[in-house]
Image (tube, rainbow, N blue to C red):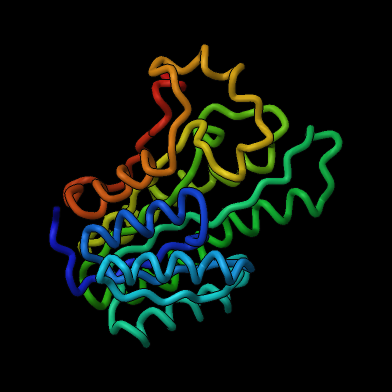
Length: 244
């Protein structure tokens, strides 16, 4: 286990699914954790207690990252509580799936504002802290949908492809301050977001023959922020070989 004692990680959308798995995996590495959640206070409190049970400090902060003021407040709360910020995991995301010709403006706007603008606002706020520290690691949770596209997900695919472009550009901007920026692109993962999908049809296309778990994604995040010190601007596909 790497020793991240005294270091602080912020995970957006950290109360469930992939975000929760990232929170717990980072706590196992020794990070103190700031857990952002949008509305489910009970779930966030449960994750907060789980982190404390691992002997780490935790702080749950409610906030909608699609608001730049809320994203700034989130980072401010982290720094006010812990005095620093070493890792940011941009995980908060939503879907509003439907065919493009049926997609309402609000379906487009909500997904772009949360997934892409939210990641930008939080990255911008965190980068200012990390630049002063001259160290830090940012991981954007994108999706294979942003790499190969997916029918019925024009808004989601666009938001996740945008995150990949943002990852590469911000990696170049922040490298001189010893800050790495990478992305993890999950394939089909067992979360609340994929409950409605018939994954049996997908299995034939996954060389490893199984649906991924949130822990599969969390392990990739942990690798990038604890061992990937010479890796930046990359997109790590964690999809069982689905997109080859």
